[in-house]
Length: 134
Ligand code: HEC
Image (cartoon, rainbow, N blue to C red; front, side):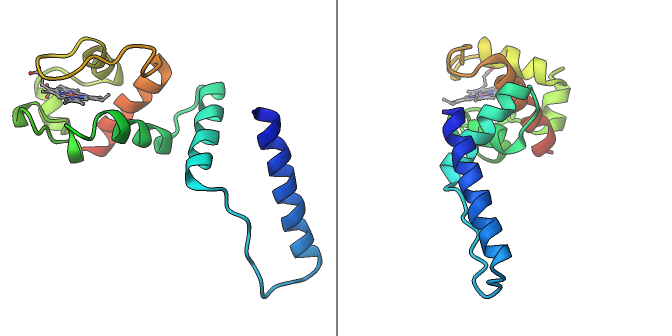
């Protein structure tokens, strides 16, 4: 998998280098990886490095949470929305606090275990929520 990406990256770099070297300025079509593939690549490298990747966190939120929490709201119980002030009023102030709820939620919310959302990624989703919904 990794080697595949590396090989692909090298091929893209080589093709780009060729375009630059050949001075073909009118066709500046730099090969762009398809979106899903790019996200997957970033998820892999973020997981490997332990770094926060806002795009991956957002994608994870959209996949698992946004159906009930669109724009940080809550379609089932609007008082339990994800806006910062609302969370803080309930003592939910850190990414870790949000992960706790993901693992052991209140009524109406499904639990997300380590298998569905690994710890690092869960923390990133928590951080994404705190930084996004004001
Ligand atoms: C099926 C709908 C549903 C999904 C999907 C869902 N939630 Fe919830 N969420 C709820 C409901 C309902 C509550 C209120 C639970 C309660 O009464 O304590 C809630 C509460 C919360 C709270 C506490 C909010 C507060 O103000 O007290 C957080 C944080 C939260 N959800 C995060 C998430 C995250 C992160 C995800 C995705 C990984 C997620 N939820 C997915 C329905 C959902």
